[in-house]
Length: 167
Image (cartoon, rainbow, N blue to C red):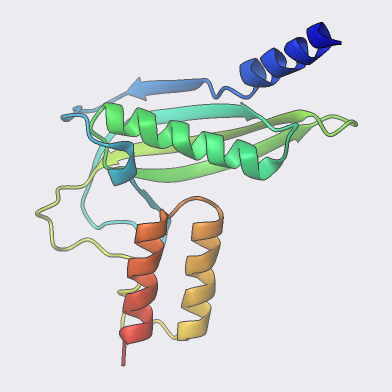
């Protein structure tokens, strides 16, 4: 019985690892903390940035998609930070499952560097003046980004405060 439990624990640890493939295509920068890496989408994409490279990560998703997504986001942030990438653009996410629910989640992202001195970058709450989304809609989108692990708690709190403080 102890051997069976040991085999199960070792299997979970081995298969829950997220292998990450990074292909550097641009200039790398000084490594940073993974918590400083910002995940962008089409609405939050900065106006100016350098592409450092591309990353593909994969996690076993037998224990649930949210766990695989979280592991993948952690690995994406770690790999990006390691080459000085302070931003990620998630290109796609794919799930593959068999009849028993076992499978993998893979994610592809572009690693970018956004110059912190560049004041022209957009963000979640500074919408274009032609944007007609209500505060409630923007808060729902923000919550979804947080729930998906794209935003950290601090990023979520700051953006939420800005939306609520708007007149």
